[in-house]
Length: 115
Image (tube, rainbow, N blue to C red):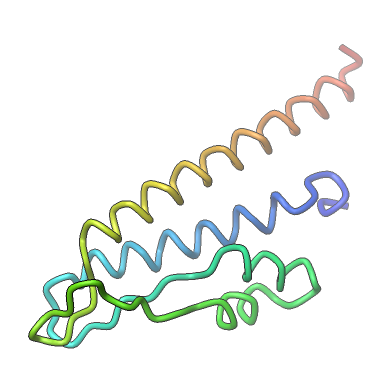
């Protein structure tokens, strides 16, 4: 029932949440020698999720190592500007999806109350 009410937005919110965690991990490990930054190709993960793949498999299939613009001498591939930009972009998408779902729930609540 939630799929028909919320469409792809429920899956999108879950994927954005997982991506937020991955980007946070990248930022937290910015000074860890040899750490390889990863990101989720959101469009590919959402497409896989809509094709019926489980969330874990969709994320695993869409996770990519980030290729650094300026490689670090210690092998760390985290570039703070890139990570912060991706984090901010993802946060805006998460917020927009959450606001859409909130509006949807409010509409359903009003319909149930007969307003």
